[in-house]
Amino acid sequence: SALLLRCGAVVWRGRDKHLKVVENAAHACKALPRLMDAMTRFGSSSQLGRRRRQAIAAGLVSGMGILAACGGGSPSPQSNVQIAANDLNAGLAAQAAGNLPQAASDYKSAIADDRQNKYAYYDLGLVEELMGQPAASEVNYRATIQLDPTFVPALFNLAILRTGPSPFEAEELYRQVIGLAPKDATAYLNLGFLLRSQGDVTEGDMDLHTAVLLDPSLASRIPPGTLATPKPAASSPRP
Image (tube, rainbow, N blue to C red; front, side):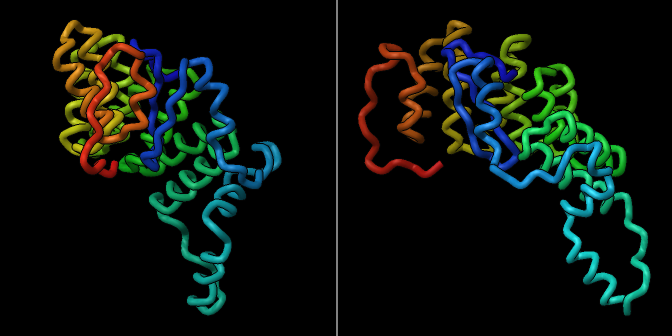
């Protein structure tokens, strides 16, 4: 569901800042199962209640440690922040297992318990984007950025969503990403294609050249003939 850029490449970013480039939006959805780690499934939501999944995600060893420290007595009630963290962990496990609807439900529960949890908003936005819900995804990316204006993955993914409806906003978002992460080659790549699509070919080409200098592997994402072959850098910067 990520936005198809003019160059024909789709790039979206997870919270771990790893990138995935695919050729079109339909393939992005098909590629999702291969992106997920082969984790042990905990069972469906009908088999495991929310609290049980939380306990698995958070780890029972931690709870046993609390009991030992208290001399074996009943543990203290969890705070809303702790409950939200458990919900977030459960959501990450569901997402890794490919159960996106359950992951979305867990992230919403985390937000209900802790409205300052930027990761819950971001992860919910990412899952909604993968499920083909760009409007809902945009709302949660914006909520993430409101809590943390320097959250680069949220800025990056919001720029992708805004490329079609508002290319000028998308351009500003990409520039924010580059300002915060000046060696982010993919941000330069997307910005370059965006500027070219708006008629600013000269500056767009400069950004595409910068993207390739930072990450030579991105040259394969640029259609043949778009740029002259860049001279190899003396030493390639690390992304």
